[in-house]
Image 1 (cartoon, rainbow, N blue to C red):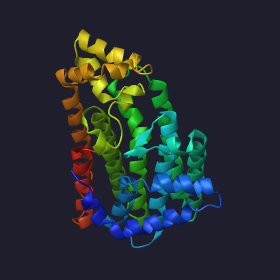
Image 2 (cartoon, rainbow, N blue to C red):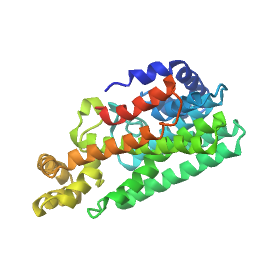
Image 3 (spheres, rainbow, N blue to C red):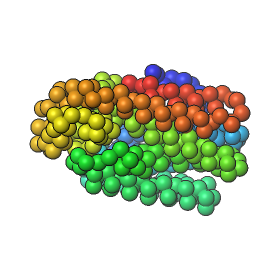
Length: 326
């Protein structure tokens, strides 16, 4: 499923966001500009800023702060990518070398810090304590989620609940914050703001579950990274957790061996038998079903909203999150 519908719906607003990004990322330090331009210019779906823009418009907002805050959300997301790729020792993202591969780990970490700090400079310009609170809480929760994911690395006994808690922190929280901010800017009542925030949380959860599924079922060229990257990093994602929970002793042994030998490359050597085990146990189908459940919950959060083109685009995003190949 393509994402052209989203690009068309918010083209003008996203162009304004890009202008804020370019201005905000300007620096007299050449390396900062080079790394920031590299990562921002590498493409990406821009889902988080898009959520903020669409929710703000659906709620009737007509100001300009949504452009600033959409840029802030994208900066925060980009800074987490820079740090994640260093932690995960990733070499490819979106079909091109990662920033740490191009510029080194030190530059990626430090420019990630620059993006974080610049994002807070920008959000202050909106002059809203509530905005600061939402984004400060979100960034802290995201960081905690990243640390918990690191702690969970290689833990073959990780259960589904613990997995969901991590992805809701490290991924879905920024979706939630973006959606909530769009509603907040428009000054809607607490019930509508909460509904949009829940929409973002469910959508982000569905999106990450699908990402974890595509790591085993996707096309490397389409998703822009190597299949099995999660396995190589020792991450117990939902397909593996499900196979461990419902599979035979032999299936569990295959998963356990793959995770325990991820760091020495042995897990990837056993990638084909692992895929067979995931299919045999129904773990891949189960993971896809869980993603669809979360997407359905997201769409249900919008039922009380009046009809509008922006509402329809938000609903389409639910289908895109679970129907995509990248």
